[in-house]
Amino acid sequence: MSQCLAQPARHKSAVFLLSGFLGAGKTTLLKRILAWETDLSDTVVLVNEFGDVGIDGDLLKKTGLDVVEITSGCICCTLSANLKQSLVSIWERYQPRRIFIEASGVADPTAVLTVLEDPPLNDTMVLEKIVTVLEADLWEAHENFGRLFYNQLNAAHLILLNKIDQLDEWKIPRYLDEIHAIIPGCQVVPTLRCSIDPATLWTPATAKRIMLEPMHFLQEIASDGVGQSSRDEPGEGRGHATAIPADQFVTFSFEDSRTMDEMCFNRFLEALPWEVFRIKGPVRFADRTEIVNFVGGQGEWYKWDGQPKTRLAFIGWKVDPREILDRLGRCVS
Image (cartoon, rainbow, N blue to C red; front, side, top):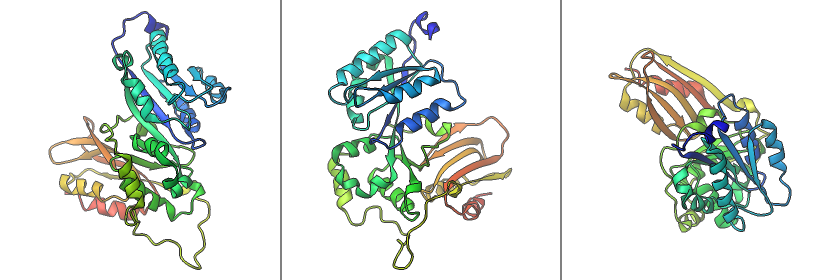
């Protein structure tokens, strides 16, 4: 950090906001991020605790990174001014490359966004991504949680549907369908203990989230037809599924040196089930080879100067790799 103090500021700090209800798994996610084998120098962690004692901050300080805590209140209400003061202080002291804010479970991310848009922070910091951790079994009663719950989901670029091992198996594809239907344009990834790969987090948000009006959210919830999965729910005599083992997360790959039909490949991506939530690798088309980074229903493309060959890695939940690969194989020219 000392090098930052000796140089004039020529950048903006990238802010990652971790949001979600109490107990959803935000601290678990943050500790996973800090444990990744990646460059976390020039990184500051801002932990907000709702209470007088900052427990999570003590745990996170063991990483050796700078941890600043706000206690005794919520950054979205009584401590919103304190949040701004803390961020100004962080910039003046460190001018970090990256800032993680772990918001309280009762924090409204829209209030945090307002703070970041005010001067002088709007000249020194830029929101990189909002990640909301959603405890999977809370979705069943989402219509009962009101505006705060809505805002935490609606503001997110990435939603982690966490603790899916606590659900009956048939509910997971149904919940994915419903979340995508109610909050279109958001990336949704099912997780166990917030386990994601680094690229899922570091990939820039594909677009600024279009905040939907709360009435849209409530009307969609009230609609009988929204998000209904085509899969049958368990009926009489079928019982309930057992806890979901980690091995139901499926990884597989595709490799071919021939060219891919671009229109066919794009249709392949569009038709993927939500349970296929991660694809990454180069794709060879007739006139170029590009890398696709596909997360939770959205894809980004990047230039590729390596070997002109299609090599894709897939991650999904309880999908049949043979069916997916067969459909992809039809796109080979």
